Length: 359
Image (cartoon, rainbow, N blue to C red; front, side, top):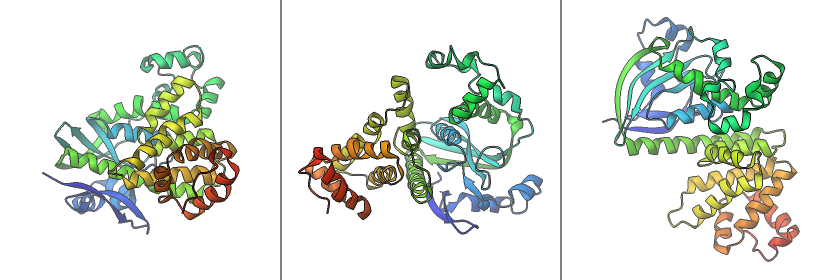
């Protein structure tokens, strides 16, 4: 049996990246060693070195629809699973290295690794596989779109406007309805190494959880440093869905129930109550708590007035209900955020009068 983990590796570009390690060796190194004397023209001319590719499990891909697609596939039992992508594009239009993965209750198998051949891709067919693929509609889809966009024509003004306003949803549908079936066809993948790796299922799921948390922290850190425009309610909802446990599922159910983003409600479901439970649990998961707290701080730091109000009211008010919970929360946040709470929120929010200052 093989062992799988995730670790930070310094790339050839000088920054660190999270990669899988198989029996202690990172995947790009293993693949580079395997193709050292290859006569494969695509690997020699296009890929060159697998150390130059980025993980497909990255939360910072070009499009959110692609992120949803990858993490949906990670949870499947049998799938051609993307592993590495072109560093320049960070999407599925260029280099895509995949693994044939199978999973049962005891073991996970990475049978062989290959790269996607794009020759047979058809953009017209892909366009039909998005919101206009009516055969894939669920009952909820028919309820939401049956009397509006489902009646439109591809390439019509109405269709283009919908695509422009809902690109993440459109791209995710195209990936699930077109890209995934494309990967299942033998003629569309060039397998270049038979790995036959077998992993313990518990160890594998632990790796996936570790990978996800590492990506979440990196993603939040990047947003905190690079965000220029104010984060509005809809952008906030996307961030919560991307980085928090069950985020995508909760957001999907939220939109079905309310028809729009009610950020106070969504934040309570995805941040406040789970964070309180984590803070009060005797076996606290420090990494997960840090992700919750970094998400709160990001929304406070870069959110517009409505988003900051959600932080002040839905999150901070509720966290301060219990003295011990509030005290523990203070140990996970930055001094700047703590100062804002002590000097602004506790003074100006009458509902929090009498709440202790965070030390």
